[in-house]
Image (cartoon, rainbow, N blue to C red):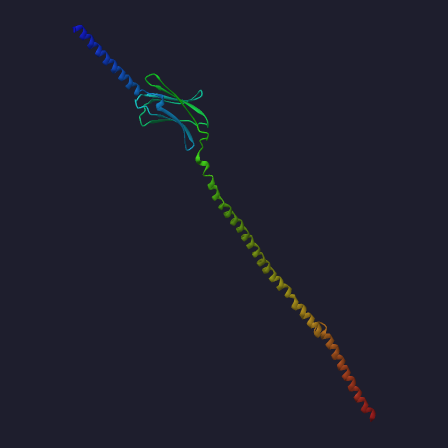
Length: 232
């Protein structure tokens, strides 16, 4: 075998090895490439606050820019995102509406489009849980019970007022009875004097009666003296 032939065989072997190495590197590069399948999006609701969450599971550590849009409206953008095999979550706050589709676009920061994905929000709206504490309004029923005693307390005060009124009328009626009783003895005394004859004319009547008694006694005395004289 000549030297030229050996050289040709050696060059050919080096070429085959280089090609195999290039193919292996290419396969490995494709295995670690940043792909859109490594990005997932979902709609979240936390205490009435909606958001779109994008999880980056690209373990090639390729910095990317994530953009979220809804139709022609830009929702948010985050650059310099580096994923991991466990997953890195990027949150975009938005008051999403039910059954609304959002588009997620991923681009390498070094240049190159990774791809796009989309997410549709649930049919149930994102509401605050403050509507559930509404049932505690039922304990407010004790409030009428407290107002009811307050109304019942009012009659007690009004009842005390009439109680004081009879006492005042009784005290006022006591002197009235005393006044009516005061003249009654005077009237009774005048009637008793009239019945017994001891009025203001009693002295005159007694004097006239005494005069008649004296006159009668004198007449009887004179008549008795005349009779003996007539006998002699």
